[in-house]
Length: 181
Image (cartoon, rainbow, N blue to C red; front, side, top):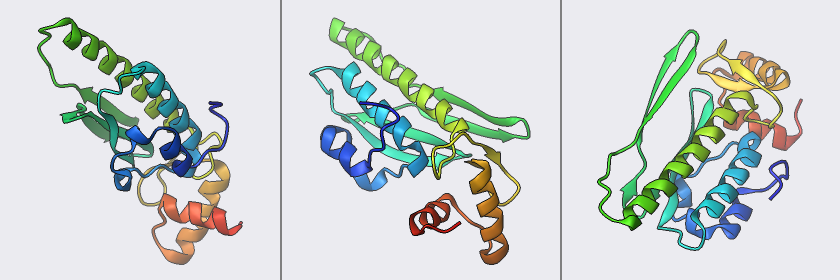
């Protein structure tokens, strides 16, 4: 799949139904869809024929970038610690240690590690992409909480904020869908 191709969440759910057991907990900003589509394709390729019960357990925005949480059946992904500092957000994933008893365990651990690397790369990529439109963006912390926005959406956020109070990324996307400037 072309990572620049515009794709909807419904299309991804149709392509990779096993990845979306509970789609209510999956909330992907419009600007991040190309990154998420590539991530879904890369995860699918890494898993191969045995999907190992993989599915997204939650996807959300935090400190301006995406957070992708997943499970393998009943096995949870690691715990992510995020600390906001004036220099930026420090993030660390702490993965549960599992004993490797068999070759199957080792294979699972290798696949899990590869998927975690894919997820980390996707999360880092969202730190530089406007979550509303996908254009190159930078952290915008002047109003409310931190969002990564392009200059156009930073200006739009300030304009809307002066009219309506705190504006979140979903409001910016809604304005795009209505054709407002």
